[in-house]
Image (cartoon, rainbow, N blue to C red; front, top):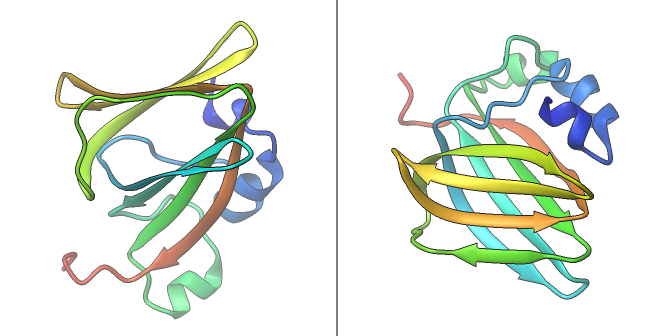
Length: 131
């Protein structure tokens, strides 16, 4: 099952990247809890997908930022995390819930389950660390 099939708003991802979104070797920049309830996971990926908007190329973008939001019946567990931690996300459907797990190497650092998964934001940017 792909991330595209789990999103409540897959059209955004299809339009921007052709449906591609990496969840491996991402920088997990922030974990924000909101009333609603909702949790936002802000991620940086230090590469570009195969398909991306022309304006990203014109601006010299070499990486993407995206925010995933989970809402309704949320269960969040953060075991070990610091801003910018490089990790891999696994995203799967379990019955009526969508489960995101984060791993740094083989160490489980975070999990979040909810009924809905939304792509809140996706944008290209220039990361100075990439040559």
